[in-house]
Length: 240
Image 1: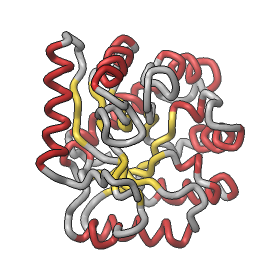
Image 2 (image 1 turned 120 degrees about the horizontal axis):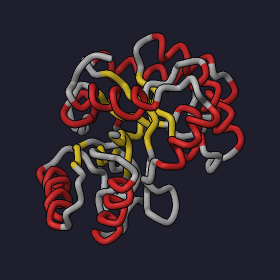
Image 3 (image 1 turned 90 degrees about the horizontal axis):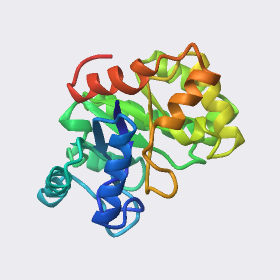
Image 4 (image 1 turned 135 degrees about the horizontal axis):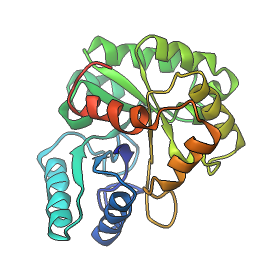
């Protein structure tokens, strides 16, 4: 499996606070069958660490990979970022400051939960105008999608990539997130499911419970497609 969305880089956002937790997350993910993790720190937020494309950010990916290798954990780290579509988003997008997923045309994008759908569409269209493909992080958590899930289905039909959170399907992120995620999954509007992991004690990267959930509750869903083939095609910069 490839985990498309994970906050495993140490000390860069509200994910792993230090290297010890990063290594524990890596070991937990690998034990559950994950072979690659896209490290996607929050980017373009109001915090001090903006995590735009830089030599220091690239070194953070490489440094964690070295420590994972030294620990003997069979896991590869792929570069990325979870870009918040606010603030200087349009300028930074035009200037190429955002880390795409493994250097591909795919850009992982998030919104405020109460964001207006018209603004979301403006952002998604701007990403496409730059020749990139938007990967919408956890659409099931946005209030407008919870109210109008057809909006997300239209996004999928237009080639936008929808990535559900593991925690939504496990019921960890609230009833509305679960209901919306389940509906989008049953409608086959979802391209991938990821951990969006932040730690080992909560929102962790172990995929075992998700696989069990898909088998028991969503037998028509294809875990190979959602957890391996689609993320692998993204990593290789192939069309979906």
